[in-house]
Length: 262
Image (cartoon, rainbow, N blue to C red; front, top):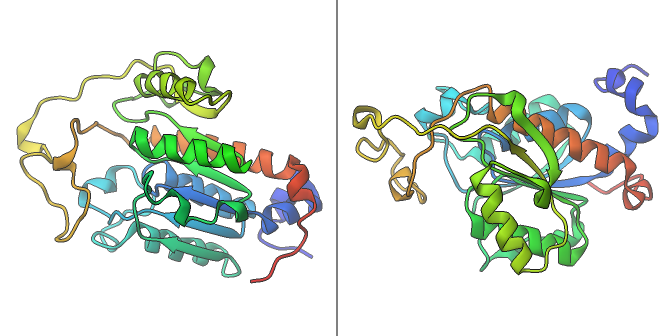
């Protein structure tokens, strides 16, 4: 019977679509990259999501984040993404966690129930907590490296963390993963040398903060505020979603999961 996934089924087959629909994917960070991950996954057939983000949509997000519109400014990103997912697939099951993942709360999430984890968070400590937790639980994870201060989306690559180059964040992650005995980690990274943002204080979040009252993690707390454009983080998000889909339809564990309770 013709349905919204019929065109995808022509490529992945009925069995592939069923595996995607039965899979549960956790996306940590619903921003410029994570939003496009969710967008592509739900349009591909993934029907069970955990969305983790404590941030709210800011006016400065409109330049790159798929969930950011004038109507959504000030709303929690996880809630906005949930509503968007349900508009695309009303049968989807979406759990939201309005919090920031930290080493201290990593055990609060049901990793044993996840078929795949996506890391698009900003901080190294959170990334390392996610990676080590997933690997200890045997859960597939893919991690996004730096997408800010870049202009060429064609230079993104999919690789093991130990095969990366150029990206400053990947360099730090290589070092920290090696210290923790992480033998392998699939990442999306860019080989473009980052540009230095213009020091224009008239448009700086550091001196003209417009975050909503009650915002927990403001740009003013960051050491550097990266520049961004619409056509770079979106590419990283779509590449990550493609890897997740391919992993899910080829996973022996997922082949056994044909149905689930809503």
